[in-house]
Image 1 (spheres, rainbow, N blue to C red):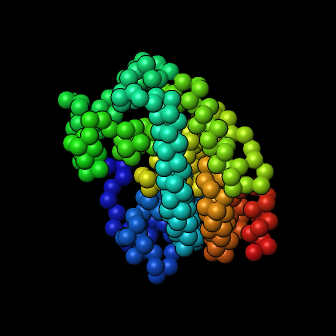
Image 2: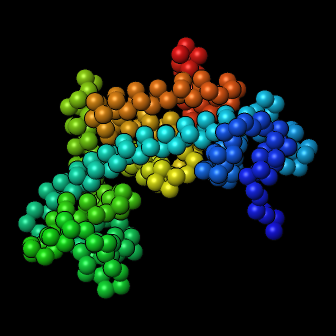
Image 3: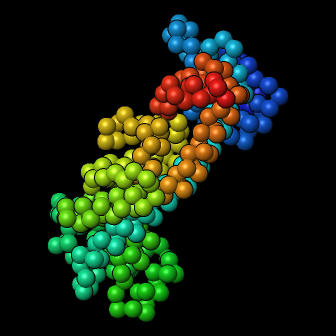
Length: 305
């Protein structure tokens, strides 16, 4: 095996042989969190590329400490938890507004979300989305729904299930498709509603186009999946440009959260940066900020802090 099992002592010996200092807390951390998650996940800013190229395996920059890499690991975990909460709020807002605008355009129709004519997208895309709805309703013989009491109540006690009820069952990815597959007129109505909400709590209103809204939620969807799967977040890049970083989506969240919610979130977010900076080498911190696309403003903020 090219990756044989190693005991905790052997893992520590490997870390130290590559130039990283460990301490008395290292064994417990490796046992609780795992070598792969901590070291393989967060080693990049600590790697000495010249020494690594010469040695043929990882070599860490002089002065690298295991406590520093673990600080970055914990920072990223806290970042995921913070962002996931706001992504959930943004998800609920999209579901609510998209359902409202769709229902308003289909007043009097029975379960129009099951009608292919209600959408403006490729047939196979619409078919898959409708299949997801049918599964939720228990009407898809090939797929069994997850049991949800609120949905079962409507299925059992009413002659139809409104889209705003079934939308609670759907994932953010499915809700995003539901929005994207609408005719342009409904997508514009959704975007206008977001613009009105923004204007209601900001002194300077802005126009949020349906294209901009689609991009924002495309980013939120991808970053939310990273958070949900406990993957590395701080340096992640997502589609469609594959260059959208966490700093970009932090700015975009202000378009879909209330001002009060966003200000509260931003305060928590900005507080995390200097907390990490106090426990990590400044050169490593500069690399982290660059990966996050925080830019010179945040670097100045950390120094002033």
